[in-house]
Image (tube, rainbow, N blue to C red; front, top):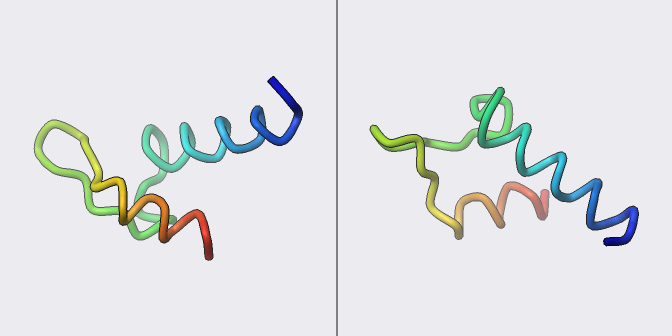
Length: 44
């Protein structure tokens, strides 16, 4: 893994696990987020 991969992994983990509201992600009852919503958030 490259440093860039590790940084991306950390951001995704943080967005999904710890503070999804900061990334404006809407998690369902099982804590899943739509992939297209996650990708759009990461592009911003």
